Length: 394
Image (cartoon, rainbow, N blue to C red; front, side, top):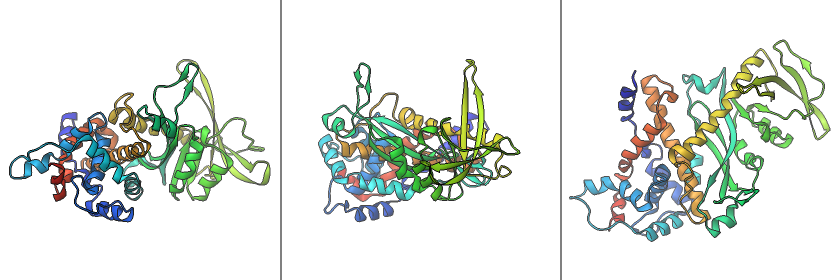
């Protein structure tokens, strides 16, 4: 199937209200006590979808996003709805009334691993592949954002923008970030990882870099029932190593030198780069039976941890644009920006998954940017069902 045909087929993508149904949105607004108490020009239900639309259109002005969101409402009326859009100040007040809790709850309820067994890239043997990593997002340079989030320092001082730090779990095959935690830049990724690890479940195989390993975090992850494949530092004491038939080793972890040692399997290998540089890798896994997961296969699998980096690129470059900071000047709205961006990304990836399944393709064979543009073009359909949307057009 050629690229042109695939792009035409992508026009069959649904719209985001299929991902986040209005009835569920209204229920969440009631539970978080953010439901509009009286008729407003910008009701809370509309503002939830608007926050997601802002995530889809990071480089577009706030009023222009609202105008685009309401295009279909205007077309379906008795002629174009006259009059100006709500002002920037009115939009900001409506966003402040909404807050971050409804978006956070919407993410928790709807964003989840979606890969079926037929999507081979999502699985390693019987395990669902997930990756854990962290990143940062830049915010507007305001005193409030500086106080809440802080910024990195360099030899020459500090960088231009405050930054918010994220850690998350990714389903590799679909590139869906299904768990996330955020805090100030100074907060360590390991600290944030404690908040996302509870989303691991039995049947998952979690990949993570050596920066995440710590006995407490490892034990927390093991307790979820998921299997782990984490890189560790060469200095980590794994006790005497017993070589196994596939070339891996059986070692043991001891927490801070106390208590009984817990068995882990160790995989060691060396990567040689085109530059001539060589790098030693040491992985540990909870999969003790080498027949279920041979060392060579696990070494190759670990390379797929980088999938989460390409997903972060989708958030920070494909959607946001290179070096574009989050749009809001206050910390509460910055957090709303982050959840809007993550919900928007999930909507795009979910629609790509459905489109790929309909065509018998892997979603990686479809263009993320093309899917993003299709959804933005069809964005007005998101709120066409909402009678209150017309109130935003005085």
